Length: 193
Image (cartoon, rainbow, N blue to C red; front, side):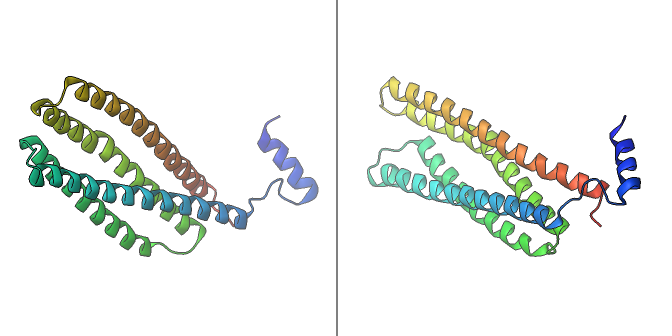
């Protein structure tokens, strides 16, 4: 016997639905997922901004004050400064976008999904754009400096580790986004009464 047949028999005997979606519990779960996505986005943005500021500050100190820089370390200063500006602009745009969602189950779900999509996009940009550029420029800077070769080897191993962790983190963000998208699809197919 199919589930739908069982449900029809149950409904005809009791005049009660076999299962009921608890709207308040669902709404609280959606709000919790939205808050978690928001906290993650905030943390990621602040890490991005502070990392860019600290890295560019350190590079400016060594490149200009100690006169130890080469052309690739100067490019690194510009890259880290740009990533700081990128993080600030994205944060500003994301914060302004939060005002556009209505306060309902579907509106809060769309808001949580929007933050999750933003987090996936930011993570993807860092994983495939920022990290490889930083690695390449930093490696070239190390090679052109008078540092021993083992600096470059350690740096390469560190990059491989960071790249692995970034991919893992990105998959977590994608999984969260997919969960919210699936929930939105289910709610669209069977709206709450």
